[in-house]
Image (tube, rainbow, N blue to C red; front, side, top):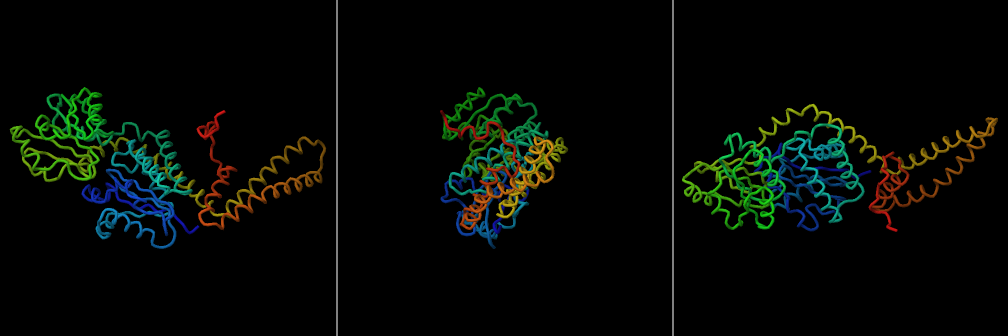
Length: 437
């Protein structure tokens, strides 16, 4: 098979937050037909873009796939390839598969074991499916990635006691303020990260929580959940003077707070310190804020020390998880190779030969006193039936394999129909697709 799986990306290990926000593709779903169009050398494509990583996963064929993807990525952000390439890792084939399984299992996250990445990966996949940008290989790869992540969480303790980015942000605040009972906090944004931050703030005894969100009703719901107070986003700067800790996690594409906005706030606060934690990428708070006296600004990269302490407690479980990822990568490799026509034909023939032998043994037990000649005749007859039964499916596969785009699909259907990969099938599998009587 000429085509292969490619994963091109950057993450919190290879690029600073400044670079990550420059090349973020959080708004890629609005670009039609996608950041990497499925045409020419690209047969399937999807984009994963979070605060800690941007990864483009494609199935491509021929030379130049990697260069083409990087150019599409840089063009989508209006940047130069030369500015992007130094931060990019490039995986192909099984390296790409293993990396994706590692990401899905949260072993490559800034906070190892955190659950958010799996939800983000599922969302990215569904967006690609909605754009009709995935086919047999990415569909199988992503569903396998989801099952690997589930297995890691079930069979290891890597997710137990795992912290979130929001937890790390609150932990950092606690180290600076100590007893938080005398302080107030504002959450800017009302998504999952803000909700987690509110939970941890309350657990640490924060005096009061304010929530500022562009959609006031959403902010109000979150504030009520935590006995806080929602404020209109347009009143953000007039309300900031009340708070000591600000945790920001909006999906804005440019800064919502700048130094010029905070100077007036500081005067009203009589220069009492303000503590900003920006866990958004692109960042919500312009770095120029950090130049002001009595202002302390931390971004997502500043949380590494907190999360590394947490990871040290779970290293042994992470090793077990990586062994699962390695094993599942090899299993996927076997399926990928089977998309060639010949291995599937061989598996079909082997399957029928095994059935013939199993049934022959049962027959000979029922035919008491039958000799070797009888066994020979029975084997010939059963083998002939098996060959005739296989003839039409194999001929059909050979014809479809000659057609553009059809070969992989029909081979995959055949393998699933005859369960040639010995996949476990639950009793309730595909229950949601069954006809209702």
